[in-house]
Image 1 (cartoon, rainbow, N blue to C red):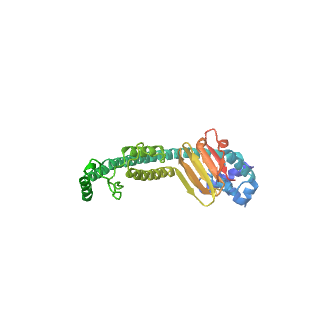
Image 2: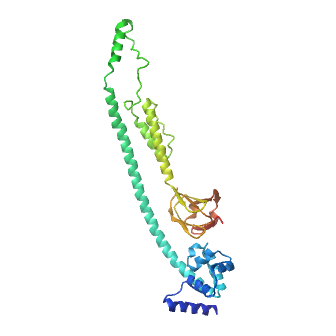
Length: 337
């Protein structure tokens, strides 16, 4: 009887190792006893060798789902003349144990992620406030002192003499303001010119806050060459800051292969991605606004904790995730087959 045979194997394993054999060990030992290879089992069950290895290694999370896993176990047991119901019972016990461990790990990872996000949020706020303060102090004190110093400089003696002699030579035109020669520099583009107004600074900070660095023109009219030059410098700074903030939300994972998997998050969700060789590529908790780009070889085996917040594409082609969503909003799918 298959049940008796399974019991004898379990007793033999217990006598040699003093521990109960797992589901995967029972399957592997019986396969080896019969002299069958992984490829032969895979061909008879019409599955891949990776799935056979996953069954024998108790790595059931690498299988498409619980329904498929039970079907594979049942067919494998019948092929080896083992008790399928007993092996399915072992699988269910193992799954309950692994679910409890996974939930505990997920809770710990979530708490660590939230604590790390709080730290970077505080650091970002402090950096922003510090930068704003330094910018405000520079434009209200340093530039103002330079302008005041330029206002107290004496006029060039040559210009004074020309003005006096012209007024004396033409008494009828004494009331007319002296004409400055065309070659005399009358516009300064150095630090002595009028500083950038507070309105410019406020406009720049508002543009950073809304993420639109192009609309940073001051509300007051341009009064000097210095203001225009200052605005160009601030525009460049705003573009750099905005680009840095945008790129910080893109996570790029590179591995051997040319297929590009792009996943966009509109809400918080756990994600796990394995490649076609059942190797884990990525596993973490992502937030709204994050974009994950993975380069590798398709197919990709993907587990989503909250699939309703996910948009996905492979090599530019959109993938409909909604048809794979389970009752608990999770989803497991294989793309690129």
